Length: 385
Ligand SMILES: Cc1cc2nc3c(=O)[nH]c(=O)nc-3n(C[C@H](O)[C@H](O)[C@H](O)COP(=O)(O)OP(=O)(O)OC[C@H]3O[C@@H](n4cnc5c(N)ncnc54)[C@H](O)[C@@H]3O)c2cc1C
Picture 1 (cartoon, rainbow, N blue to C red):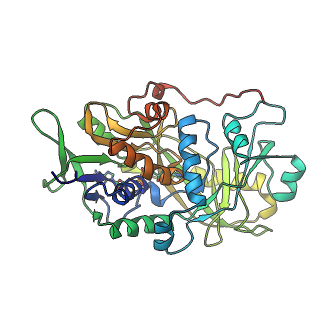
Picture 2 (tube, protein in one colour; picture 1 turned 90 degrees about the vertical axis):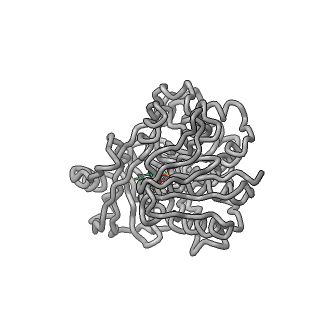
Picture 3 (cartoon, helix red, strand yellow; picture 1 turned 30 degrees about the vertical axis):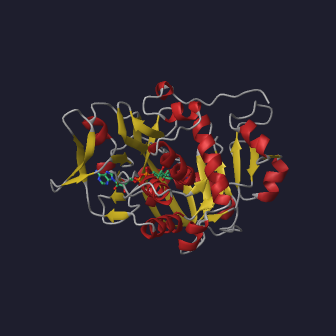
């Protein structure tokens, strides 16, 4: 018997990372089906590209820390194929809480790794003099930074092509094919043709509902909209400055590779990916936010805005692994606001699960589609420092 064939639905970061993970492991023929005319058209082409591992949800943080290690020691195949740098280790200042409050949930892991430093208000004022934070407790994270997503996507695509992965663009999957006993045998395409496969991986980003319905279940995540704004500031700021993320304000900003300032109000209202519209109110709120907290860099020359979709599970943990009762059907989905950060860990872990290798029990259970934690609403609670 030959090696099992795999069809991956979705050519975003989840599909590409999984395809690369399988192909480099020699796990049989892999085909990626993407409904748009290009890869990374949806969330993977509309995000801030911040590498942030300081995530309250434990399983997601574990994946993020694993991925972070890979970004700092990039696989040579990706470096060789990338048209430019994949990762800029500019670091991140995370503002939250207030001095004297218990430490955030991620703090112990970061302290153990020596990956965080508490900054006094005076240090914050010296390093980021132009920002007036709402969260008055500042943490410096030198290992965080900015991922150049288009370079990463190109590197993954080229590495996949070199390993023989097939890409079929403009190919929309309509549903799953089953045999008489319910075993998944491939996918049905929009033009009514069929693509048979021994294994199917669902990595459709925000378009998960159709597949979950096919399986007679609800997908355990919401699709939420987030806006990004791009502007040129007029004050003393450099695109090479650290990412600043103010959890207390729900606000972040960073420089982009073309010298603009990218900022977000961390909005997250429910949205339908098939009818995605920008909200003009958000532009006014962004202007107000920069007047209040980045006044030293004004006036801003506003360039453009975009809106993207984040598919967020209730516990902020991705859905990764076999669908219950279907051992040859897998999800790599619900990456929330972390998909770019998590990508290099996903390439390894999705491959392990699809190839039948177990992950540490608690991690695998937390990532499962039917993890009992998924109806738990994430809350910000603190342990004493
Ligand atoms: C505004 C914003 C900012 C963000 N900032 C960050 C950040 O700073 N750091 C970070 O780590 N993450 C960030 N994210 C999150 C990150 O972008 C996502 O987690 C990630 O891109 C999701 O990747 P994906 O492959 O699951 O989905 P997608 O990129 O949406 O890919 C899914 C693909 O599947 C295809 N597809 C769907 N249905 C079908 C079908 N039936 N047939 C064939 N193809 C199909 C779609 O066309 C799409 O190309 C941000 C997201 C947004 C929206």
